[in-house]
Length: 296
Image 1 (cartoon, rainbow, N blue to C red):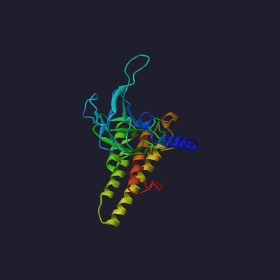
Image 2: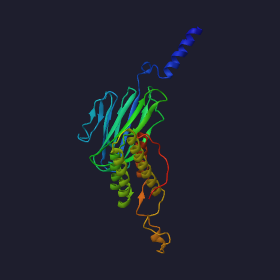
Image 3: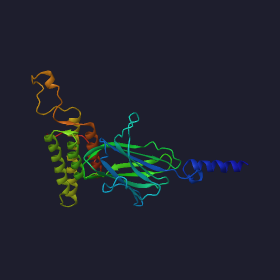
């Protein structure tokens, strides 16, 4: 009798740790991905590619009712949130589910811009037993019409795991494009400030493209990393309320005039997105984000 109890206890422990999900009604693991934009009609679509290369979603070349459904059991739909009181349609959003019963591995989310727009992306997952993992991912960013942005996530359906990595694929070219897009949707300004930031990135991109042997390549990489750090410092300075360079603190204009916001500005959305992209690129180049003297 004691042996039977021990065997039952061992089996129960195995199930609770993710060993036998199918025996208890099937594998309920899944990824849920939602996207919304600040517009009545959806401004982005996305494609999700699973570890086997199968895809679900829309690459912006298809009608919104004609999404790809290459991953068994998955779906992708554009829905209007609507207004419960008036019954009128509201802003559109994308609801997508990958699964149930999906494999551990690397998944790629490729967003494409139908219009130049801000977007909100929310990704969460469930384990073998349908229980939500706590490590959901949520971000606010922006995309230009006709461009793409790619995010790579690692997923493990075991209890306590879930989304173990979520990172954007970043290059100097994509970072410069994001800077211009942020300016285009009025999340950063003025034009002179944006041009100055773009010049810093262009210098970093140029340094990285130089060739000259192993030692020289390391020096060029360090220079590119420093340009990215400089870019972050300038963003941070303006985001934290940096004074407009053309304004004098002792200016005797009336109080109302002095209280006007400066022409140079960085919104929270632009600051977080651009800083995160720059830090991701620094890490990819083998550096660590750090502070140093700004060289205005």
